[in-house]
Length: 514
Image (cartoon, rainbow, N blue to C red; front, side, top):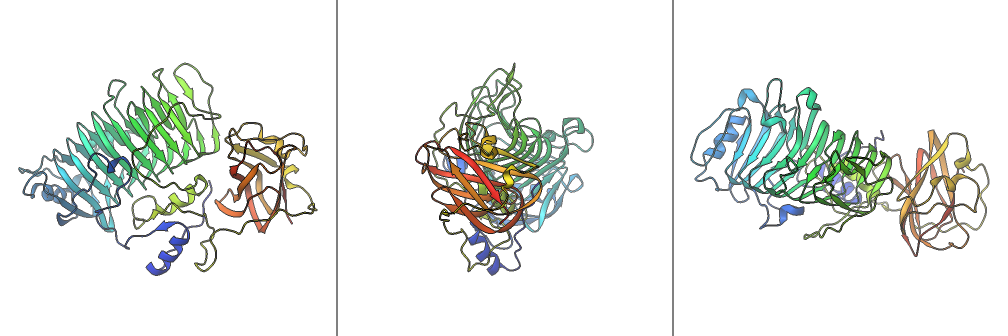
């Protein structure tokens, strides 16, 4: 698995400069409760403000969280609960009061509204203890880790969900959270982020979901279709067997997420669900989009995604994968404004920003992958490369032993760009897409030549050359030809077409050491 170089933040001033160069916006060093910045569907239906304007209360135990809720003047009095330390079964008891309805062994946000729960200081960890939102509205959960919540075995909490919402829930924003398990249902765990029984207007942003059999769901059964209007953006799903998420009915928007090691299936749209899948990066995964485990199909709109080493099963009974060449089957109208990062930037941006304890960093939608982190005084994007008039010398490494390839938005075989035959070519399924050359071991490259097929010269209008190991931009240009750059050791190099006047036809993608 690729491990991009981490951004080192030694001081806030240096961090701010570096982050700005990488398309990252920083908040203060210690997380504080959000009073703005909500995104996605949580901005609709009147918006989500949590406990903005309310009293701030510090809590270091689950019982203190419940006491803060119960100490309000009413169940709707705004409150910001700043949580620090480890919350577990041993310190989470039931507290009674007219403004709350709590229970032991779970953080119970039930029949309440206008609450922010935010991790501060050294961090907030909910250990084997879930957060349950029921018959509640206008809730923000931010900068927390919830881990190893079980539905069977001992101890149990929240039906095995890290964060679970049910029964007439409205307007929830979960942001910069880390939700993780240590296995699947057979080990006692359930979902990391579940919504059911009329839960609507929810956003999950800048969060990490990992090491679980089930990422999460919208709708508990094929008859539970009253949920929806959920946004997932800038999240990292890692080592998840399925449900990333599972959608039963309703509408969702998934953009700028990084999906790594989805082992059985990913976004599962079924029972009439609709999802817009927008500029995501899918990597080392299987069946990342489709309808699975049912004959009640859903639909999807796909725009600008990258599928990197994604495998697809064959269609069959109760199995309808969107690939190997995903196409839109519906149109989803998004009612809110949002800014997209380029899909190629997503792994790096999400790595820097997602999860608890990342300083509430967010992308500003203007990313350029960097490795290592650049000096703020240097340009963040290489200048356009003019095609060279001369033929390169040396050995074309794309034809060498151990070389292979892959492509995104594939319309024809990627192998045609590395067969030494200029009369064969690769094309994307539309006007944009990318094609790669890769090797079994690190290979030094400093020059590439991209040759368009006869009759298609000049169709490519804008492109980027990427170090696919790290996401770094090696060169950019406006016409195909020769590109040179500092010698780089890598296992995979990608030619990404970002604009074209028609359907490109790339005859050869040649790579050279010098």
